[in-house]
Structure formats: C-alpha cells, structure tokens
Length: 595
Image 1 (cartoon, rainbow, N blue to C red):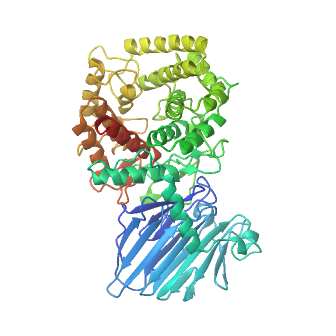
Image 2 (tube, helix red, strand yellow; image 1 turned 60 degrees about the horizontal axis):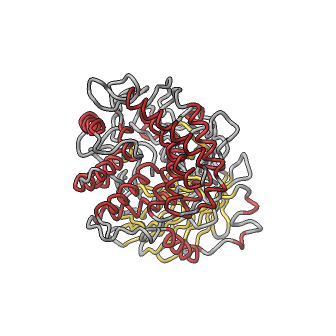
Image 3 (tube, rainbow, N blue to C red; image 1 turned 30 degrees about the horizontal axis):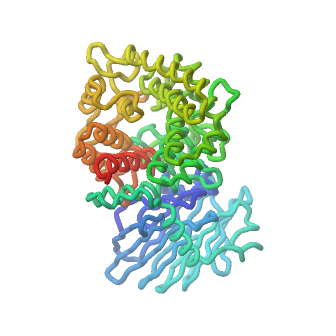
C-alpha cells in the first residue's frame, strides 16, 4: 500500500526504554529497559520479529510523519482518497508503554503482534473487555492493549477501528498482576493527560541558555534541537547512563556481518554527550551522566575504568551472543546482542571523561562537586601516569592486537592535562605539578614517534604511514593548535584519503573485517570543529550542512549513512554524531556569532 522509505524511521523514548517506528509501525521495543529483549523486533526480522502497525483499511495511502516541536512525540498523518487518519504516538512518562491517540475519518487496521525474547516466543492471546492481553507463555511478563473507541476484533491481534476519536494504549508488565487489566489498573494515567505531561516535559528539557536562533541556516537549527532531544532521550533516567544507540545489530553493510549491539553506556560516547549538554547549557543532565560514569570508576583497580562499556545500571552487560532464529535486517547475519568489546582495554576513555568533567566544572563553577569527586580524578591520573607507555585497542574497537595509537596517546595526555588543570582549581598544587610533568612526557613522545618523517603528518599509530579520522581531535582537545604545520598536513591527508565524495568521510580505509563502505557521521562534526578553530567559517558550516542533508527524514543520525539513498547504516539514533553536532554548532556560534 505504501513503500517503506528507510529515511523515515522515528525514535521515541521516555527515559526507560525506546521505540523505533517506520511509517506507523512499531518495529523495535525493548522492554522494560533500553538493553532488554525486544517484544517488537521486525527491525531485525520482518516475518517473525513482531510489530504494532496502523494502516488505512483497503486503501492506497501516503504517510507524513513529524515530531511536535522539539519533543519526542510523533505525529503520523495517513492520507487516502477517502479521508485521513491522524495518529499521535508517544511513550508516557514513568511507564513502559506506548500511547497511540487517533482521530480518523476512515476505518483503519491495527495489528498488534508481539513476540517475546526477540521474536523467539509467540504469546498467548486473550480478548478482554476494552482490549487484548498478550502473555509470555514462559514467564509472568506480558503486553496489554487498552482500546478506546468503536472497534471490532477481526483476528488474533488484528483490530478494525471505526471512524472517530480514541486511543490504543499498550503497556508492558513484568508481572501481569500489575498490568492494565490487573488489580492495579486504576493507577495508570489517561493517555490524553499523559500527552499533555509529555509535551510539557520535553518543552522543559531543551536548554534555553544556549539558543542559536540568530543563525540563518534553518536546517542546522532543526538538527541542533533534534540532536538535543535525542541525547536526552538516550539517557536512562534511573541511573543517568547514556546509551550509545537505541538499536542492536542494525547492519553497517546490508547482507554482511558488521552487526553490533550498542544499547550500553560507552564511557567515551557518554563523555561526549555530557560535554555537548554542558556546552548547550543543560548542566543538570550533563552532571547526571558524569555522576554515572564516576560511579563505575574502580579506584583500587589497575585501571580506573575497568571496561570501555557498562550496562545502564552500572554492571557488566550481557555477554555477546548470536540470535540464530532471526534472519537479520535485509538478511544481515549474524544478529548479535551483548558486546564483546566489554573485554577490551581501551586507554583513551579516561581522557574523554576527564575532558567532560573539566568542561562541566569550567561551566558550572561547582567546586563542591569537584571536591566530592576528587578521588575519581586522582584515580584516573594515577592510572594514566603509570600505564600510558603500553599499547591498547583504539577507539574504533578493532578486534585485534593493540598498537600505540596516536589518538589514544593524545587522550592519555588529555587525561593528565585536565587532571592538572582540575588540581589547580582544587588547590592540589603538588599533584598538579606531577601530572603536568607526566603529560609533557606523553606529548614529547607523540611529537617524536607519532609523526611520519616522510609525509610530515600525524599517523594512525606509531610506525604507520596511514591516517584515521580520530586525528582530527588533536586540536579539539588542545594537544596542538589547528594551524600547526604538522596538523595542517594531517588535515590535508584526511581530506584526501578519507573523503568518499558528497562532502562525507569514512573513519579509515580498512579494518579487521575488511574495507569500509559508508561514511561515518561523527567525522563531519569533527571536521567542522577543526575548521571553526582555523577561522574558516564557510567550511565549518558547509561540512555540517552536508551531514544534515544526510540525516534521516526526521533529522536523526545513524552511525553510518548510505550515500546514494541517504538511508541509515549501523545503529541509530547514534549518540556520537548527535553530541558532535551540538558541540560543533555551539562552537561555531561562539566563534562567529558571539556579541
């Protein structure tokens, strides 16, 4: 009836979990948390994964989707020759569910087809007065639908809704005793009231202190505010953990094996998010992310962050495994959940965290918070000082032996440089001098061993002649000035070697799986920040504009993007590029539009 266009994916969240929609169909819904098994998983298997779809009855139709203002409340408008259906979709605050409020002049069909444990377990189905109950036959969990309006049930999980107004409210419960039709059903909000609260909530979340209204680029402003809502929507409210993306195993390359689970908190990604929110003026949410990261620091360990990623409650994530019963999106196998990168030693992450912490203290002036968490900075500085000479895996998480990656060494320098600066603020002068000396030692080594004598540019790792996009961060973290001749040669080589046309860039040419196929969306934000530091305002805004044009229809970024169709590749919405976009545009505004 309608062609699914994969730039039209929508992201819904209420800070507990999230939903991915496509053209009025719920394709992904982990319950009860971001990292839980999904009860609708057609994103990964369109035949057995399960979905919750709405469509006009027996009619050709088109669909238009948009968010209400800067919220994560979605409006779908279905248009046919005989009339229209307006659906307002949102995740109510405080519950694991979805409300779908409708107003329709024509009949439509709702299909509710949950399948528990990522499509593995078909539910038992019971019709009840006012709705339906779907039970997991192997546990106490279930999904219930309450239907308000004139309807008839056509088949198991298939409902015909007659013209008028009403809603479908779906609620997940770990124990059905507490569900919609259980003994505690009276506690759940009316969807109309929930909608009003949700809109108010989202209107209060977007920070007012760092607005960019004076910029002329309408598209960039729209992406900026959408990026803020995405960052906030990826924060697990009970703990403050920020997940790297909402989806699992959405392929980087269709039909291939680059399929990973990103529904965890990477120290690096979360630090980027905290720094972006700080620069945008949302200090309270930035502080929550930083506090979560502090909570997983192990001061008694040989490494302050024992692992590069954590579950959203701070514990270890599920071990990586393959879901053999799912065919994968576009037959992209294997479908993986969990992430083996948990076992890697990634030594750059202390630097990203220290930078985010320092940026927060700079902007908030919260010396009490610094003093309360001084132990965390000491732990990071002590570890980095004692370990920086050894090799590690890079931020790109290649599953191979470690190297002396230049980006990693620079981030170790960053960890000690920010610890030194924080020590001065805290009055810890002895520590400050010690860490300053150690940071200089790292810097001296990188400027000796991290540069190609032949090409006179920084390289991916000691002894290499290649570059990777992570080298763009060297002036971003103030390791060198952007106009440093060695860095300018590096920038020129990145522009040449990693450009694949249309103003987009890959992060490197090859890795342990093979050749890279698609642009990595974060890179454009780094390029923009470098151009801003060089005073090249036209280039800075142009590279961001190219990225914005490669976003999905609702201004969402995936990890990678297919250039010709501009459809998502890799998990989405991705925290990296959304945080990078906020960083880049706030820095651009401050450089070129400050009063």
